[in-house]
Image (cartoon, rainbow, N blue to C red; front, side, top):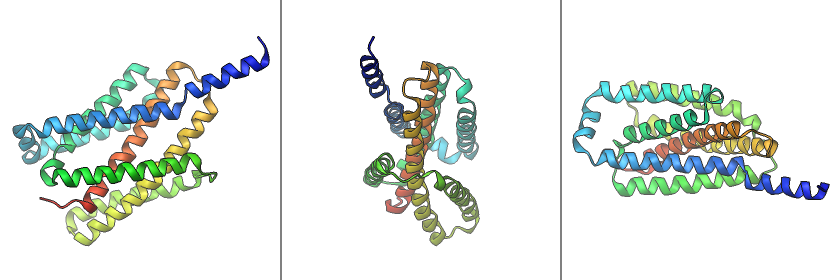
Length: 234
């Protein structure tokens, strides 16, 4: 087999086997599953009432989500592809259950508006990340610091109940997760370029799920912060 023919086959395989494209497919599937579950749960008045009135149930689900996502992120490379896929699907479905309560707090128009804005800004930041020549890796440290700052400020505001701080956190949250969207997308693109066809099928699947989980989290959090800014509570 000639070198040129071998190079042509390799180039075609790389194009057909794009990690970044696979990540977006899995992320979209996860978001779709979350939306379907959220709509289904929101249509069950008794279950939604139980979520809203039973704090033990609601916070139990939230804690379950946190444990699942942290465990999946930390152990995904040691899981089988089937287990990694099941864990991602379970997290997306569980997130749909807890997100169903937004249909009580906001109108359908508010949710649709926030979703549209999120999709547009997410796509814009992703496009920037894959086309820019700037290395965004130096931003990772500052973005993580900003994320921890958001968590601490949100916990403090549970007790302060300050509307001004509420909106300040929301605007900063949008900035942090727009940055994380670009940062994570560029990291995934770099992995995609480096791996090519060299990664085994199992590792390729695990990395796809891991990348999808990161972008999924960026999208969901960006959506929630936009909803807080543009949505009017019922």
